[in-house]
Image (tube, rainbow, N blue to C red; front, side, top):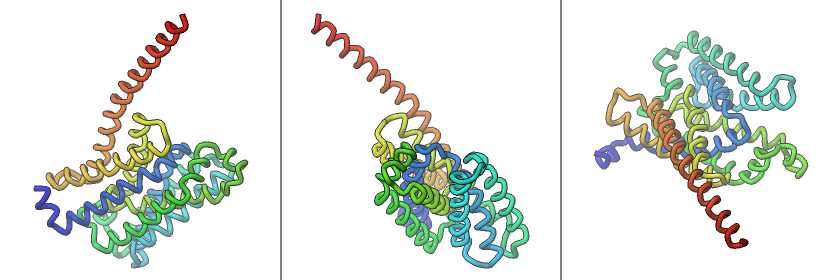
Amino acid sequence: MIFELLQEQLFQLALIAALLVGLCAPAVGTFIVQRRLALLGDGIGHVALTGVALGFLTGSAPVLTAVLVSVAGAVAIELVRARGRTSGDVALALLFYGGIAGGVMLMAIAPGGSNAKLNSYLFGAIASVTPQDIWVIAALAVAVIGVVVIFGRELFVLCQDEEMARASGLPVRFLSLLIAVTAALTVVIAMRVVGLLLVSALMVIPVATSQQLTRGFRTTMVLAMVFGVLASVGGLLASTVSTKVPPGAAIVLLALAGFVLALGVGKLLRRGRSEESRVSSRMRVEEVA
């Protein structure tokens, strides 16, 4: 059955989109989670909805306007968080409300807008991904992975301790904006796969899952990307087998199931390491005695 699916162009396009999103979202999410900005993806997702609606209103490509508005929103979040008197969570909340309200309002008055089109961006429509969508998603994915590879070390230092990064001479403001902009691009990449309302889940849950099993930052990122790909492909297959299963929801639910499983396995691993440590300590005491 899988071999037959691979012969169909629609499934091929959906699979490529799922793989790219499964790789990019957890990679960026690792930095976001480490910096305690897990809701950043949600905030940008709501702003991106305004960008999509603006595309319908102006008759331009919704993906292009979503990129522009998302990047502007991400920069605004970071500037308000860094310079303003408003805390980061309040800044995100303001963008939540403004983004969703602006999107709904613009979609209502847009001549090409409709509830069906709005839902395809809110909840994803991976089955309707076109070759043009794939080229855009691939280009944005290359940009995101490029940032992670080139600036990964500096971003790691920033996420660990902003003051230490500043003392080390790193361009903290630039790196902070870079994380925000990269998150915005990731949201646009994933909106056709899991939807704007669920995109943050794919940025956060695989990272949280990986953290249950490993400690190192790089290992956490790689393992999170593996979990992201598994959840994305698994959700796509589930929605293909049963047309009643929405792919975006299936992807997120599979990611959550993986987290629950990793939570149990992680406890067993920690218990085993603790037992080994006690045995080792006891043996050293006996040797000294």
